[in-house]
Length: 165
Length: 255
Image (cartoon, rainbow over the protein chains, first blue to last red):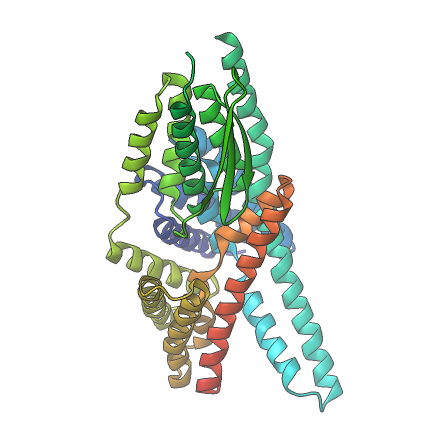
């Protein structure tokens, strides 16, 4: 496994996260954290991919790491978790799979003269499309579930502070 | 303190304004509901809230007299703006802790709305840098990174311009995707770099509907299924517009 290569990918993932953070107009104090979170999530994903773990699971792990970190970052930097988590997971979107699925669909619409090659394209397209969809679900779940789980905690804090008064 | 009709009206207008601002800036339905409820609680109002993607309906009830006012407000079609989401969420805590009055809240909301975006050139170049990062993530090198940078820069510029000219948002995305893939498709046609295909596929990734899709999932598992479905379909149409732009460029260059 090539560690330098993985570190480099982490760096690029952080940079992509930063670009989206600026596009979404996040407060300046959160920019550095978003870069770090994007890089860490990317690092985990590519590390797991290097260990030959399924890409859907690897994406879920990366997104979950980002989701959990975003809750801590929200407490420290005083901004809602989604400000951190959405830009950070965007570098993991399955763009290449979605692209290949689309190309496959076009080919499937075009010709059907050769059954064997048609079936091969169909298999590839299904595989790419399912991967793209499941990675998307894994990313949203990884980010959303930590937010929802910890929100209970915040509710409690409001209640207890009201009761104390 | 007895609340007059004017107090309730002011609270109604302010809460609707806060809610619609949050909704159009990219907050999830659960967050809109929590924040509006938190502010209303702090001011001593009982509220009922109906949140849909394009409009909010709010009923403010005076606890003592049981008088109520209900009204409806459309969410304005701004883009995603996390500075407003973060600012309003922060403000809602200070409303609870420091007992703010309604005029104070209105002032703070006005200040938040007037906060500047990043300079346009900064946005364009950092998103373009994100485009070349995508290209690097998928294994692009050297000249391919430059192609992705320029294509993304051009694509985002076209999108901003067409939004300014009040084109339909999906059509603006189609224009952006078409422009970006025309430029990167040219590099495929000319055979720049080892695998120009990567630059072609990644040059449109800056348009991915990340906020709608993630919010869609959050809304659905939070129980706001209808809002989740609406956001999901919105994301799918965006994805379709991106694909359409890519396909047009592909057919034009015959690659």
